[in-house]
Amino acid sequence: MSDLSNKIAVVTGGRRGIGRAISELLARRGADVLIGDCTEDPGKDTAAEIAAATGRRVIAQCVDVANSASAKAFIEFAIAQFGRVDILVNNAGITRDNLIMRISDEDWDSVLDVNLKGAFNCCKAVARQMMKQRSGRIVNITSVAGLAGNAGQTNYASSKAGLVGFTKSLAKELGARNITVNAVAPGFVGTALTDVLPQEFKDLAIKMTPLGRFGTPEDIARAVAFFASDDAAFITGQVLSVDGGMVMQ
Image (tube, rainbow, N blue to C red):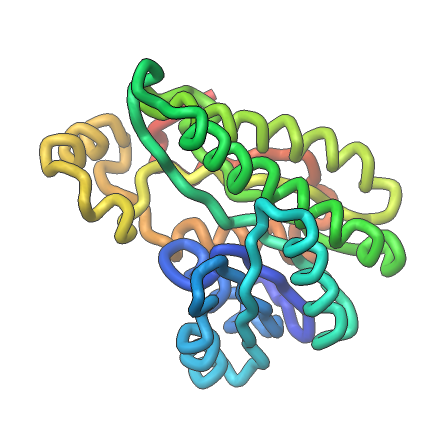
């Protein structure tokens, strides 16, 4: 089990779904956690529930990761509250699915801004602190759509594919300061976002998955916890597909 005792973790999009599972598992492994979300309620109830369950300090703060000033203020808040940042998980993401003829400029830009530029903004904001510490773990949540593509998701798949290149490039930039940068690529995961999919689509997705089921948020969280820990101290620039075998490369 990956030990994260007394580490400080920041998780964007940590209020629900995969983000909540990541936040909770990092806390259970010993980390104090700052949850960020762009809604009016960034997850204060979630933070309180995780804190009560784990005994760790878990707090929530509003952040718009697509806005560089907001991302910078968010990381500065983390440093002010905890004194350092050991782990950054860029999980915040949105979808605006449609065929390319029907994707508006706004829907293209918003997906790229949150999913890709959001990770850039947060990494840029935290890099100086991690370089000063001469240590850090950055984990980006990409997607199998960014590895294999997906019809109706040219905007989403592009943002996630971009995140793969971003991860590898940043790993090369920061490695000399003992900062690792890796990515986790989930397949289909049972969350509120997938609950609304038509049943025939769910059946097809399961049929395409050798393990024969959707993943769980906890499946993704365990991969993130590994990359965030000293167990992965000599791993950087890697993309781990947690997809039940859907995309094999």
